[in-house]
Length: 110
Image (cartoon, rainbow, N blue to C red; front, side):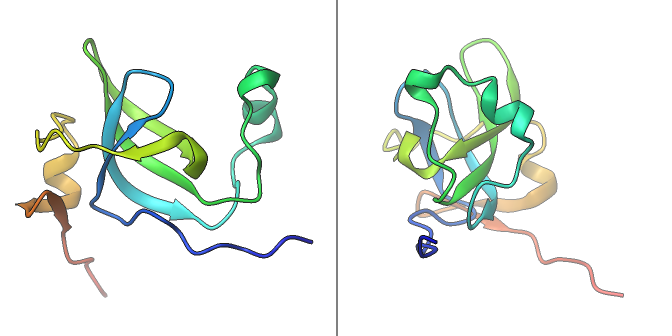
């Protein structure tokens, strides 16, 4: 069994995909793959990522749309444009952009 690695990216960090032209802000991290086998098998085999690495949930955008993406660590790079992410859910999860990172909203506790 392989050892779980420390996540390279953090919640609030803006990243871009290594291969495809989209970028986004991280709002959650899974230590290893935690999606369905069907989802994983739908990825073409030649670009299918390993499961034993962190996977990131992104509020993502490309030139046409905004959406939620699930991306392996091996396919992410730091986005160095400094531009904000235009996803409509950013304001629900983050208070604003500080020093190139989004600041997570405090979680409500009961």
